[in-house]
Length: 244
Length: 244
Image 1: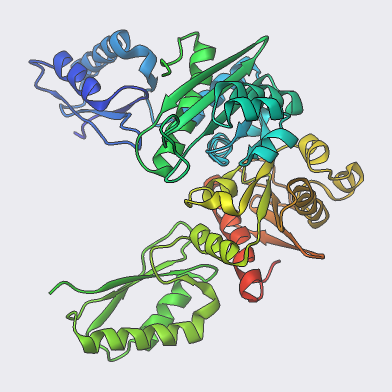
Image 2 (image 1 turned 90 degrees about the vertical axis):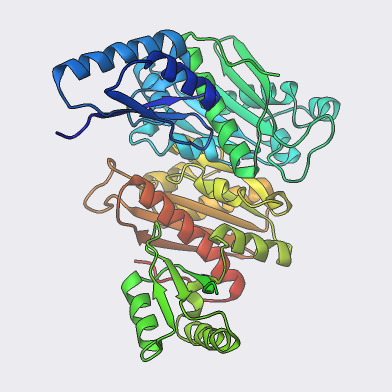
C-alpha cells in the first residue's frame, strides 16, 4: 500500500526548532517518519507517514498533528499544499475584506503572490510599486518631511505608505513594505536586509522592523512572506512575530 | 576533463523548432550533444558540449553558436545564465532609459522580475498594479469612455495605461499589460489567456494582442516575458513577435 504523505507549512521558526519538536513528539514511534524540506525561508516542513495506510496510522497521525498545533500552532499556516497567499486570500474572502499594497523593495512581489490565487480580484484591488522617494511622495502621499527626517526605510514612512495606498484604493487593508534588498544601499545603521512593514486597518496602523538574511531574492521573499503573515495573524487574532 | 557546458536562452519559439535547428546543425558532429531543458515557457534551450575541453571543441562550439545566431538570432536573448530581466535591465542601463509599469493581470510580476536585478533602481522607477477598472481610471487616467467602449482587455485601454503610467512616473518607457489570466473571466470573444501589451516611448505607443496557453501562472509568466521581450526588441531594433 502506498504510504500516506502530508505537508505541514510553517513560517517564522528556524527549521531546527521544528525538527526538534517533531523529533520529541515522535520518540518511540516507528511507523511515522518525517523530513524537513528546505524551503526558501527555511519554513517548510514535510511530515511523511511511512507506515501502511491503515486506520490506526491515520488516527495516530491526526493525534500528532493536534500535538503539533498545540506547540507550534501559530507558526503552522497550512496543513496542505496551500501557500501563504492562498491562506491569506481565503481569510480575506471569508471576512469580505479588501486589500491593496504599497511596495518598495519587494517591487511587486506581494501583488504577484496575491494574484497567483484564482479569484483574487474579489479582494485584491491593486497596488503601487513606489521604488523611489519621488513615487512614495507623489503617488502615496508620504510627506517630504517624513522622508527627510526618517529616511525611506523607517516606521514613519511605511506607516504613511500603508495609509496612503489604503486611501487611494479605498481598501479595508493597506499593506506596505520598504527596505533594503541589497546588495548595495546598506549602511551601518540600516544594513542590507532591513525591512519595515506597515499594516493599516480600521483606525490603526501597525509598523515593525525586521532584518532578513541572504541575497536580494531572499530578502524580497522573506519580506513579502512576513507582510502576508501579518495579515494572516491579524485576521486570526494572533500576535505578529516580534520585530527588532 | 570536465565537459564544457553553456546555456542558450530563447524566447518566442516553440521548442521543437529549436530542437530541429540544433539537430540539423549538429548532423555528423559526434563530440557535441545538446538537451532541451523545459522552461516555463518552453523557451529555454541548453546546449551541452560532451567532448573534451580542448581548443578544437571550443572553436567548433563558437562556430555553432555563430550559426545559431544567424538562424535564430532575434529569439536568442541570452547566451549565459542571465534571464530576460537581466538583459532588459542591462539595455536600459546602457541607454540611460527609465521604465515604469502598469500591470493588470500580471499583478506585479513584471515589477518583481525587474527588481530581482541588483541595481535596478537606476532605471526602474515603479509601477501601478491596476487590477480593477476603478484603479485603471483613477490611478492611470484611463478614460471611462474607453473602458466602456472596448472593455478592460483591449488595445485602446492598454495604450492609455502605458501612456498614463509613463506620465505619472515621468519615465522614458511606460510598459502596460491587461488580460485574462483565468481560470474565470473568459468569454468567446476574449478567452482566458488573452493579453494586450502596450509600450509607450518617445512619440509612440505600440499595442498588441496575444493568446497564452496554460494555467493562471503560465499566462502571467508568458505575458510578463513577452512584455519585457518587447522592450528588448525595441531597444535592439528587432521587430516585435507577431500579435494576433
